Length: 87
Image (cartoon, rainbow, N blue to C red; front, side, top):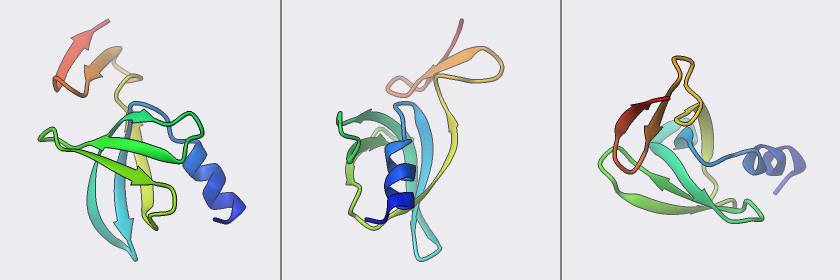
């Protein structure tokens, strides 16, 4: 994996909302609910609760569109319950 791709992959954090794609085609997305300490494996939970393991060498491209734990309106969204909690 090249260094810029590695750096981008390692920047992913728990709670990040991501969209995964290949060759410009959006395949699926969800919220990162966990990751390994070295950052090469993440678990993504989609909107219906399906949890998938994704490895850094799976050749996905991704876009981070936010983080459920850091909303501008001071709300925290629990990705497992799908509920917004006021802080």
